[in-house]
Image 1 (cartoon, rainbow, N blue to C red):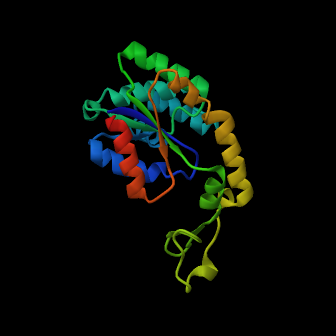
Image 2 (image 1 turned 180 degrees about the vertical axis):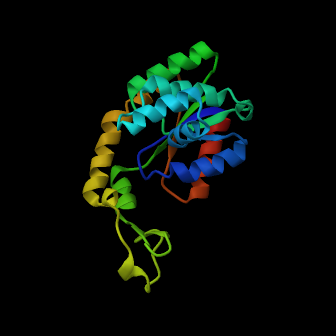
Length: 209
């Protein structure tokens, strides 16, 4: 199964990715992690990417796509892969699709986890971190013990204002990739409201069709 995982921030993509790679026995390829690994390994593209990052620039799409093609050509991707974190924009989706076509790689599914915007805001803005243990809690969905509440901190990108901004950015930049893949008939929409296990069951069911 060769797939891309898409959804707004706070939709639970990380949780589902961990479950799905176990189910399908395929590697989870996070674009950020892939970049860090390539830099650490000192590959040609990794060295190139490192130069951009050290100068404070974004790594160009063609470099990231080159890394993706290198990564999915490895033996552990023979049965498929799950790409997460890329593409984030329509131009990236178009460039990746072109590169995959030239490499003879056919994408089978784009799994879109959908949740209401207000739920995104609630999920993100409710997060708190314990600076002593590093444990992440949620004031609604995973409440902290009473004895640690007073020391919890909220990250700057987890405020309501920041969450609203992230939702808007998702709709303006990332959501347009969905119609692009819809045109290819490979988008699999999944309701992201519910328990993690229930959502995993929905994903596997829609992928089995």
